[in-house]
Image (cartoon, rainbow, N blue to C red; front, top):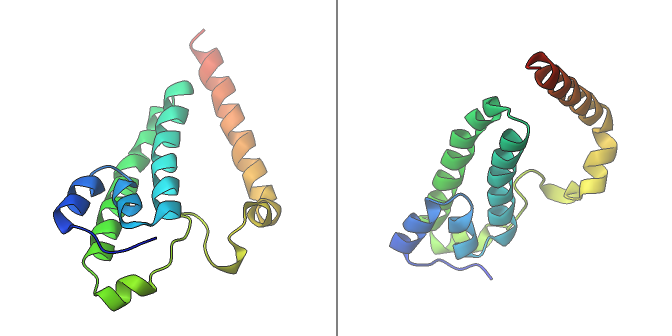
Length: 125
């Protein structure tokens, strides 16, 4: 259940990506932002791809300002806001649909990622 909360506590929790959204009751949005944040860190650590970390400030700023905008909205506007996942929304908000629709692009990205990993691992040997 989402409802407007203490603005100062919302500000403090907004400093953690996704926590401000979860505090206000936007669980899907908060969990997906927090999951994306930690997934980027995990992938960049495991694969030694520090270049991925450049995405973190963008995700952090989006999370912070989106939660602060939602917290400062009028009560009628706040009640009309819907809790949605960060990456998908609307009537097509299911993962199998997106996997089917963008499977070619996802395959190319995964192949390029695998090639990068091979080159990265063998170039330092």
